[in-house]
Image 1 (tube, helix red, strand yellow):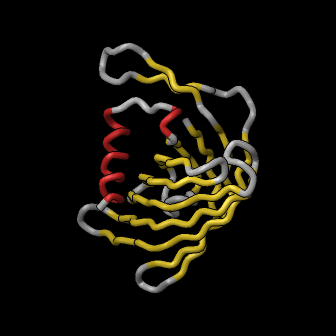
Image 2 (cartoon, one colour; image 1 turned 180 degrees about the horizontal axis):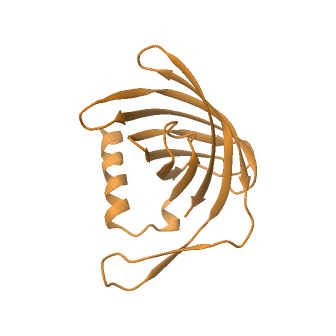
Length: 173
């Protein structure tokens, strides 16, 4: 029961509450060819629960053309989250592919080894947003910008297997 309650609070806080860096959680957005968190996505939003300097739990929502998905799991970095490092991500995902009339559901477990390459350039270090229409502009500074590359091994609920490479740009704030 506590796990479900945490999930509901997590998604509620994304909409209604400003994220504080001291609460042990971050958010990230990633763009690219597939992902280690949700294997079938091009754009993805994740809520990250920090465990320590090297590990985190994640809850993700992702989408691509005619596909949407959700996922949750655990990600471990061999060095640190904020330096270039090898990582392993283990998670569960549920995706719907198709249109409202016709489609199929894919669900399963993924195991994704990869490498996170930290970008240390000066491109767009902040996000500017408004909480409501006409309200004052607010800024959030990116904590990390990285390129993630690797391969996802999937075991799907229909007892089939799959292998997908991924490369994406992740911005953590």
